[in-house]
Length: 301
Image (cartoon, rainbow, N blue to C red):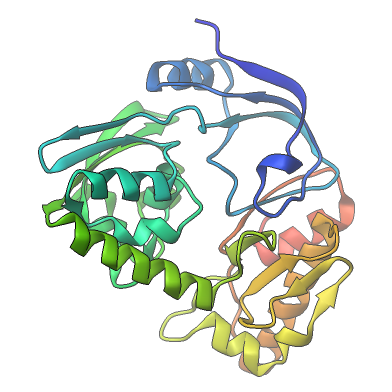
């Protein structure tokens, strides 16, 4: 089985941050079978969705990765929908709306894909992945292809068993509720309006929320209180309307972003003794200063 791939791939154009260097090789599987074949042949290879929450080093990455963007099939069976990992959230929300199914309206404002959203139990506007999920098909390095029910996924805020066991989500099924299309669309429109007023437009390259909310608090509130909205580094700036977003305003580099994240993290730690945890992923390894910052921010040993 031959899987489409590209060598010496310039990843920058695919990332929502518009930052990133050359990747040694990128594989684009189209289904679960191709994906499993790849992982068996490439033990430990890193897997990404559509790179909406990933900062990739401007110095690139000296190994292969898998992107699930071509795994994009959607199947609707009555009130249930089965979506592959690479299906983008807005596309899935629109598709189920057209079929008069409610429960995924919150996805309309997410640039991410199903795999990443299930992995982190994405949520917004009083809805979350775990509300409607029936099961997730995942890949486990030890067990191969595994299927977990909603209860077995161990969902909590921005978390699932995927993080604890290093699982890769390949497909998910959701059980939705039949409702009039007009009602579903009205809720999606409200969600879009909310996102536009609370988060930067994707015309301003960004990766969404930079840090997770600590328990019983808000990362945005903490960052606002230490003056983060006035912070910048090189071409990267904290967004003027919300302190938990970084925007790439002037051809910023990955090091610009990481330096800015470190400054934000350090000031919150100094003032509140709270260590914010990054919500975005990072891929790199070639830049010594970036490696030092990641050891602190991501607790990498």
